[in-house]
Image (cartoon, rainbow, N blue to C red; front, side, top):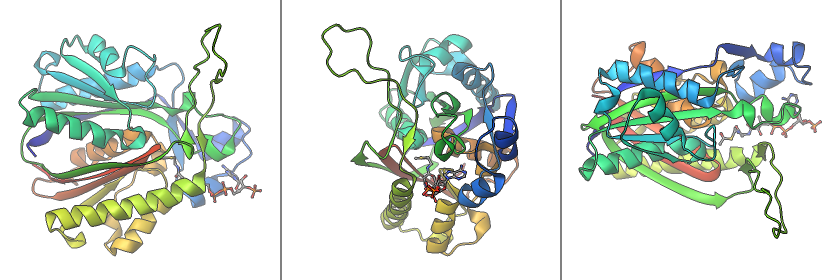
Length: 321
Ligand code: ACO
């Protein structure tokens, strides 16, 4: 699979909100102790006046600079988000406008697995010779979709964006995507009412709904399946992997995987403590941080694994170059 990542960048809101501030400033009936012990989250970035496109444009500009390329060098932009600033145009088109790109631009919505779905699409386009330099921009403004009076959900999520530049290479060794369709377990209802005079069932706009315990069960089972399949398909074993980059939804889900894989804790980097769950943004943000602080080095093997609403899931193995 002929791709590699040549540049990364992130874009964050100015405002960081700690668990204690949720109580002291927003009057939420929760505590740092509850959130930390159940999820591992200590804080999250939340938009004040930033749009999703603002975050995405910052991440993109940083990734292009990191890759040493200009917007004119891109021949595809793939956006990943559960909700762009508009139903249409897409996040990818909004980013193209900000950076003055004129290439193809389209979104995927794989929820928290979106980054892996975008990597798979980018890999297919490059292998088919249909593109050579692709921007993947993941961006989420979860603060706009949660009910800030519902302590079961609003404490879990954060806002942010992360971009990667993908070109021809040999880093991606394996990728697999799947779904176990269950549209009830996590959802963000859309406002589909419009003003159609003959529509009978008008669905009101709604907030994020999640059955946390069901998601937990799905997540651990999907991670286990992806790890088993990845190793079976590549002949690698758990000790061959230098880092496991898992979707950052809940530290307890990652702890469960650590127990199953029996590998050292430092092979499972996390950043959920600072960011909360930022859906498809979590894995590319981890990648960005680890490349730029020197933890990821050429030749190392990474196992990327995610699960999300749908339920979607996926795993990928990269040998960094
Ligand atoms: N602060 C204080 N108390 C709370 C809070 C909160 N923020 N949230 C819930 N509670 C209370 C509930 O009201 C309930 O109280 P009650 O027994 O008096 O009714 C009690 O805590 C237990 O509630 P549960 O929902 O059963 O809590 P649970 O132990 O399942 O933990 C959690 C919830 C953390 C969401 C857990 O189910 C989980 O980790 N699920 C995995 C799902 C996940 O990580 N989703 C992330 C987003 S989805 C995705 O990324 C694909």
